[in-house]
Length: 199
Image (cartoon, rainbow, N blue to C red; front, side, top):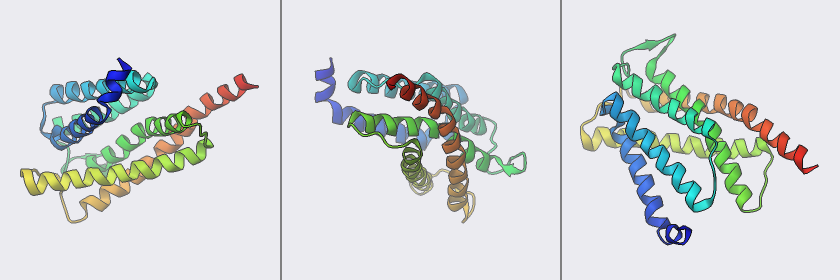
């Protein structure tokens, strides 16, 4: 089976990336149950493919954090909170950008660390977090481009003001910093356990 997956690696990877981008483009217009099911199915497909092709088993707890991030966004859409509702002392859009990044960052750090380990490299956890944060912030910027495409080409309403994109990126950055701390706290224990077993 792995030989078959290896031959189809490029089309499968491209299909997963395209499906993920299409989902992000349309998720704010989907009903809550549909959004939850489609998002969960996409996460399951990524989990299955990475496990089958690369023998990498993503920690279920970290995947659940990503699923929780999806639900933060889905619930905001379901209750029409974007652009008009205040959550605590901030707009729901700002809270969502912060929470989604914070909840997703630990898996991004873990994937980067695991990928480097497969190539025989082991960076200190702090350096892995730094590089993962840089990559993740780039992905956050790409999401802002997806919002722009929705406005320009699909008639969506996801940009609420001329400062919407930089404000979103500011909250993304804050969420990434919180997620980096969360990743450090979660993954440090794993590194300490590996070091103890090696000695």
